[in-house]
Image (cartoon, rainbow, N blue to C red):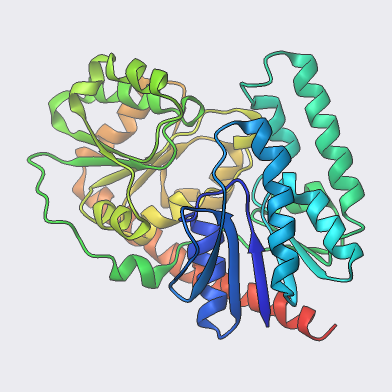
Length: 366
């Protein structure tokens, strides 16, 4: 099939969009084009990239990028169009009315996210945004052939017969083949890889490292939410135990994970986190790492006794669980083995990708 995937929000190296879905479909023999913000048109790993203009202003991007994406999409004359952003819903509708097959890929509970957006600076704006997104989603159901969701709770939110769940599981082949960097640490390493934001508990994690002291160091990998937040974190006493390694390719991140001893996913309990299913825990586990996670009920249900849980808002509790692992090599070994087994048996992209193929095969027969 000729497949055109489109995102005006995600970066080219997005795990789900490019490294999982696009590359998987291309390796299966489909002709895959990805319309996305990038510096130039090129072909990467069998995926043809069509570059959108980068716009720093959010409002200009939301207004202009979808129009540019629609123009490029019509040029592709694809068999299936696969979208990843709520701001592209009008584009989906136009293409569907033009007789195209359309997939909407929902990564997050977007309406719920509106309640946490800092640029919506009062409750009224947040409630209005929440209502507008819910209305747009309800209307758009009529226009999609398939709605792919990244989590079971999002499937319940959409409550539609068109919904299929394809979770952000770990790509075992990529992780196992990722080269390990030539770097040495003179103490145990705690690693966090992902967005370095306030609501992901980064401040509390650094404060936990102050409590742990010289017994370990924290490697932070990823991009900061803002320069102001970065400076705020650098002023914390625990920053002495931190090494900021910057932004890396997916393969590089996996290499540094494999050089670490303990991993953390201590998101704060904002509404959209309580039932999220991030891909990072699965990647940590695939790298044979014991994991400390937020003590959300949903996460306890999914991960059970394969990880340790902590109150993410309490640096003392986070430090206590990390310290527990630092002092017990047998526990680290047990959890790392159980975590890897859980991913292999239940949460690998190799298994999830079969669901993606089934969706496309069904569309091909329509």
